[in-house]
Structure formats: C-alpha cells, structure tokens
Length: 70
Image 1 (cartoon, rainbow, N blue to C red):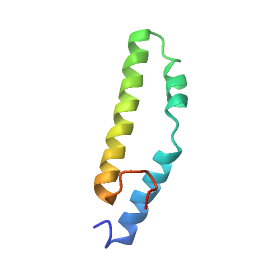
Image 2 (image 1 turned 90 degrees about the horizontal axis):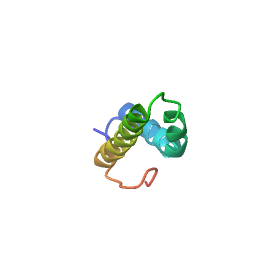
Image 3 (image 1 turned 30 degrees about the vertical axis):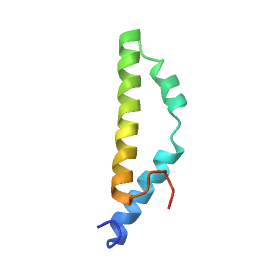
C-alpha cells in the first residue's frame, strides 16, 4: 500500500518528517511543567513510549529503520 498509493505514502512521509523534527529534550522540558513528580514521570514515559512506537510503525511501513532514510 505504501508503494502503490501516493496519498498514503505522502501521509506516512509527512509523519516521518514530523517525527524526525521532534526533540524529546523539549518534550521533557514541557513535561517538567507538571505539578507533581509522579505526573512528570508518567508524562515523560508516555511521550517517549509513543515516540518509539511511532518510529517502529513507520519503519515497518516504509521498510527503512532510519527516519528519512530512503
């Protein structure tokens, strides 16, 4: 589907570009705005986990392990 449908490919490539631009250090700084350290750790873990899950999903779809690798 990725190779045969240009609209889907463009959508995936846009997601890949956004992920490549993402900076987890900045996300961590935003997470530090949380009121409690328990909430902070929860938010940091959720963001990092979703980032990695999305990278893995994009790699599975595109067949390339590195963001913007092809």
